[in-house]
Length: 105
Image (cartoon, rainbow, N blue to C red):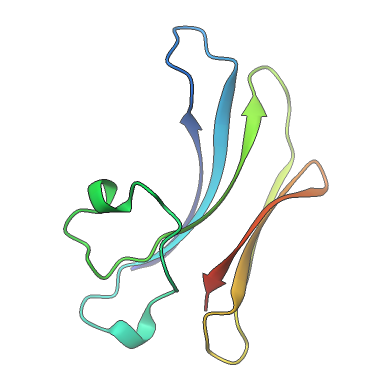
C-alpha cells in the first residue's frame, strides 16, 4: 500500500488548544520489497506508531497552524524522475511554501 495523508496533530495538552501541527505524510507499506520503498523515515514516532510495518518508510512535511483561522493548503509530492530517493514533499499554506522534506522516490 502506498498513500498520502494530510492531518492535524494536537501539540498542546489543553482542553482549549490554540495550535496544532499540520502534517503531509507519504508512506509505502511494501511487504518484503526493499527496492520499492520511499526513502528514510522523518517520523520520530515511527518505532511506536508503525509497529509491525518494519518495511514502512513514512516521510513528513509539517508546519504549525492556529485554531480559528482559515488555511488554503496544497500538498505536492515531487518524485525523483531517475527512480532514486531525491524527490521531495512540499507543503504550501496560503500560497507560500511552509515545509519541505526530501527522501521520496
